Length: 138
Image (cartoon, rainbow, N blue to C red; front, side):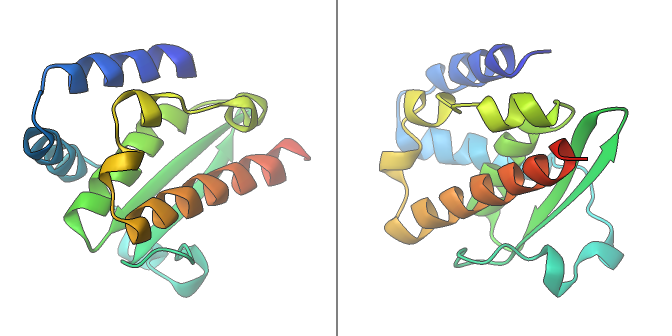
């Protein structure tokens, strides 16, 4: 599935909720559905700097596509990274680098995050795109 199609699914999901508390609850549920992150990958080099909470991100490159796994020790942040993994994992490096991630604005996520969480969101995106850049140059 293309990035834009996955983003559209997320936009439609979040449109079901009118209150931000309900959207946060959905975000928490999404975080709980994140596949388990291998404990051996919870190392310093996989920590995303710039996040207030601890966020681990690992990427593997297989058959021309980047596959991400992630975890966080904070429930809202875990939901945020789960959205990014859902959108970007399994895509080509070129598509990841070209992704605008318009769903973030469309669902109102950025303006409903604290400044530190918003900075963390940018750090997560930056790290995911950095992996794509590295794998894309191989």
